[in-house]
Image 1 (cartoon, one colour):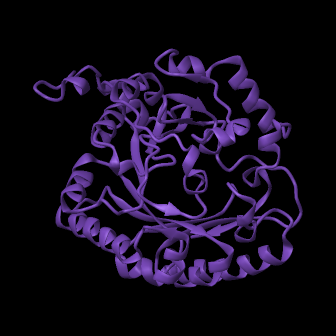
Image 2: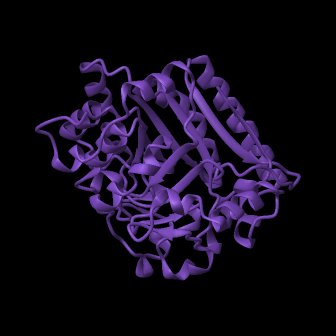
Length: 354
C-alpha cells in the first residue's frame, strides 16, 4: 500500500507486500543481484591526486543523476539486496540524495554510501540516521594528517574526523543500532606505514569496520609507484606484513578489518567487483559492469564499456542483454576483454581481516 501525504515522487512506488517480505526474511529467499551501485553525482570538491577526476580535470564530465532516471531503476532495485549510492563523485552534494535513499529502502534494499565527509554537519547526520541507511563509509588515505592530506588534497584530515564524530554522536543519541560507520581506506605504497595507526583511530572514533584497498586503476603512469601490482613481490611482501599486523590489532579491539592484496604469482581469479551479481549505474544513466569501466572522461573512452542507457532502455532489459550476459560469462571463464584482462581486481589475491 502506498503511504498517503508523502513525497508524490516516492508515492508512485509500492513497497514489497507482506508476503514477499516474509519470504525474504523467513525463508532466506535471495534476490538475484547483490548490489546496484549508483553514481548519484560525478562532482566532488576534493582534488585527490590519485583520482581520475583530478588527473583529467580538464576533460571531466561532472553531472548529477536526475530523480526521474533514478525512478526508472525501480525494477532493478527490486531485484537487488543492496544499493550503494556513490561513484566517482561526492554523493552528499546531490540535493536528492535522501530521496534516492528513501526509494531504495522502499524497494526493500539495504542502503549504503561512501563520503569524503566535508559536507556532513549535524543536520545531515540527523537525516542519515533517520533515513535508515545502514552503512556510511568515510574515505581515508592515511591514519594521520600528513599521510592523508598528501594524497587527498582539499580534504582536511581533521574535518573528516569531525564528520565521523558528528555522525557517531547522532547515532548514539538516537540509539540507531542499524547504522554502522566504516572507513574506506586507500593504501598508497608511499604511506604504507600509516595504516598501522588505523585500528587505534577506529577505536577512538567508534568506527565499526575498515576496508583497505590498493590503487587498482592508474589514471596516470606517474602513479605506478603508489600501486601494488600483481607480481611485485617485494611490495606485496612488505604490505602483507604491515596489513596482517594491523588486522591483528583491529581484531584485538573487536573491530572488523578487511584488506586484499594481489599475489606474487599472477593467475586468474574471479573479479573482486563481483560483476556477476552487481551493476554500476553512472550519473548519465548508463549501465556498466563496474565503476572502473565507466569513467566520465573522454580521454578514457577506450576503456568505457556501456551496455545501455536509461530512460531510453529498461534497466532489467539491459542487465539481461545477450551482450552483457556474454561479457559476464567470459569474465567468469577467465577470457575477458582486453581492459579486464589486465585489471588487478581479477587476479588471485591474498586477503585478510576480522
